[in-house]
Image 1 (tube, rainbow, N blue to C red):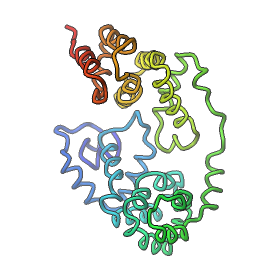
Image 2: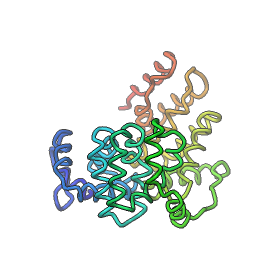
Image 3: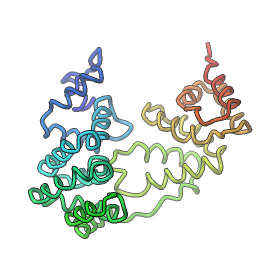
Length: 303
């Protein structure tokens, strides 16, 4: 259990899980009542907790920050100011600009956020560096209103941000995922997909693997299925299996019936762990015939 779990009531000070767990309303109320310095600490935990290690408390804060600036832009800016004041790790701060706390202000709430961000830049010069990450996007239409975009660009120090980025994230050799033997590819998938948000930013492997996976499921679904099975043989972490189910397995299943669906149904009959994985797939965009076969495969429980 993490600090996030303790402060939200999912565990006690020793890390022992509490029963019953707090409901959604109670968790939201606890977050709203926290001092802003605790929000900054929570953001750090969200950014630095590895995906495989995310807990109920961490997920609760992920959801909170995902909607904060959209639902309450003024509160979102208060959070950004607190982070600029109290967070010393620039990699953690950088993820505010990459993620939704700043991005939602620019896309959905620019009319409210622009004057507040201009004022904040006077109080917190570090904001100019942070805004530098978004300078190109703002200039290319991320902010619909040209006047607001122009005003925001005046507080973006893109050269400072790019200089920091180059020093913080030196270039690394890409991984040729397509050349890896299946067992090594499965191991690499687990390693990359287990990473924290802050680790993901340090090279391009997460993004390259995502692109490779997308290509594989579209062009070679049976090979993608073999990779799913290989991952399932070495991994049982529920967070990772969740994205394996809703990601690669879901994406490789075609709309129409055929050899790929045959192989999926056969594997579900053979391996109960694969059957459980299949139960996490959404069947919404498949043909009625495929939905019927996959539903049958999910419901064939073993004694």
